[in-house]
Image (cartoon, rainbow, N blue to C red; front, side, top):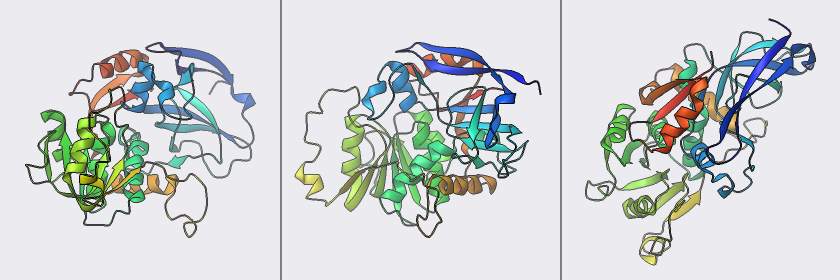
Length: 334
């Protein structure tokens, strides 16, 4: 490898102002405890990232302002290790929550997870988005065999359907299009219906994972929850919508049904032994990779679009149309 390499990075300068910018990096400057990783693929998040692209970056607390990076699901191959790196080896495929970029430098103690043999980089690139669903279920005390309903079948919702069945749940799903409904059935839902049909189709859930943002989806979630049910909110209810015209905490639901409502999706990043924290982000992702390696997580079935990296802007523009035919999408940097 030449000592001078050109790095390409996606930088969002404002609403719909996404640019691919380049800089030169010298591999001679790689630190003793650093690794240089070339990206293979990165995954598009049509939720948070799309909101950032639309110009709503600051709606999420603590989110950076423009100019800012985009993307957080990166699969790459380690091409060079610093002189004192012992944890990693050249040629190893790894996941890191890094932005859309052709390559990156990381410290060897960052959140980096090896991708097992037998797991494609395309499937692996959705591990962090899948982890959000795992975290949402864990935060609400999921137990194997419970009835889990996923409301909203964007990429995170579809990943959650797949991983919930791998975790032993009886899964149902509510979609905003027949295409997304059918994808949910392909990745493990026992039952799936269209929005507004949940109650009449007999869905009654112990645990609901709400990934959609609309007030209608929120209301359907509280309607289908059983007495004592829990709602794990991974979406942003009411985002870009006016006030709902109803009381989101109406006593008919939250007192009458004794529901538990929780904002979710967080897992600790602390690197501590499992006896201190059973599942941090790293161990969640390791579990997800193990499911994928054993054929229990068919995320390849939800990938509808594959873009060469130089078509990043085209992909975001397509996502902006909210096409129901666009589920999971990846960028290929190879």
